Image (cartoon, rainbow, N blue to C red; front, side, top):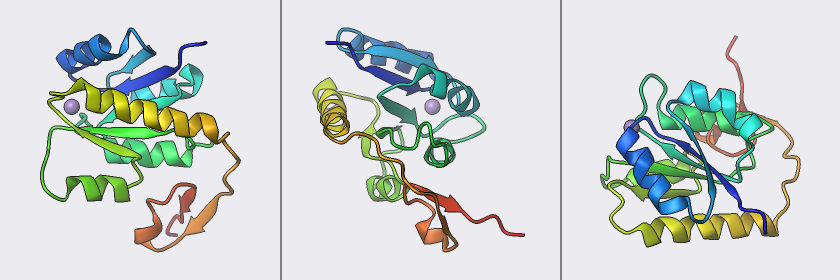
Length: 154
Ligand code: MN
């Protein structure tokens, strides 16, 4: 079976090496060092799932996710948040922002990461991507919903 591909957006080289150590045997892994590089390269890389660091220089992971969800080529992809800020409420905040899962760093149990990836890839395999009609949502609370285009204030 063709190996599935994971896009990793992570600015810290040690963390990228660690992710490669966990993932290389099972998946193809393509790295991006920051948000703009990822948004530029992800459509062509065409991964099956994205691991997205929250703390990135310039554009943080939540902003990168917003752009991913606005891009018809990427919006259907499962995205897992990686964050070192393991504070209470983080999980809820990130899931509400539209992430599919949340993993806190340092990753002490690679099984948790591998299980989350496998579960989201299974879900993706079971449900072929359908065209999500773009909707315009004015309320900020709806901004995070997948497929929701944010109305541009004039
Ligand atoms: Mn970082």
